[in-house]
Image (cartoon, rainbow over all chains, first blue to last red; front, top):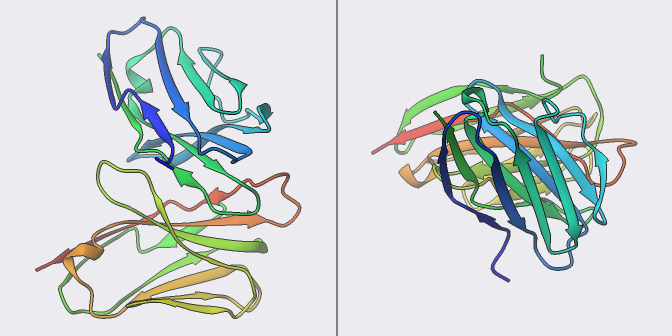
Amino acid sequence: DAGVIQSPRHEVTEMGQEVTLRCKPISGHNSLFWYRQTMMRGLELLIYFNNNVPIDDSGMPEDRFSAKMPNASFSTLKIQPSEPRDSAVYFCASSSAPGGYTFGSGTRLTVV
Amino acid sequence: TQLLEQSPQFLSIQEGENLTVYCNSSSVFSSLQWYRQEPGEGPVLLVTVVTGGEVKKLKRLTFQFGDARKDSSLHITAAQPGDTGLYLCAGALRGNAGNMLTFGGGTRLMVKP
């Protein structure tokens, strides 16, 4: 298995533009997590899916953020419109309960 | 205040030294995990501890789960430059739905040659 695959690795966009981050979890894992990491705030959970259903989205900062998981092998995190304070590294992780998480390599987002 | 407090936040040592990092909480966890994250990559799982008082060893790394399952420590013997990275503890709270973990703020370790 190639692990959790995220794309793109780097994204630079202008304020106000729409940004879509993509994640392919490990086959057979039934839980998927989106995290945001910054130096100031560390690793923050944004949203968590179980069997493709959103279970906890209390970490999604604003209505500008949305996430979908249309099937077991694909998820997206969308920011519309993007703002400079959204600049961070966004990680996707998958897991099969009760195992540990496997993280992707992340998407480094810069909003200018 | 985070549910899992890690200390120290930063640690810079010379190659060959020993070190211990701590992960503390007032909550009880059904299990606790340690991850290491290198620059430009995602965190990688090192170990899972489940039983209070449990000790696990991974080469020069020793992990311990507190008797009351509220805290954990990671001890590294004879640190190497390759140990440099961000160490994160993460706990599964008892009664949590699904497979949710709570992460600590991390300890950033630098081992100088």
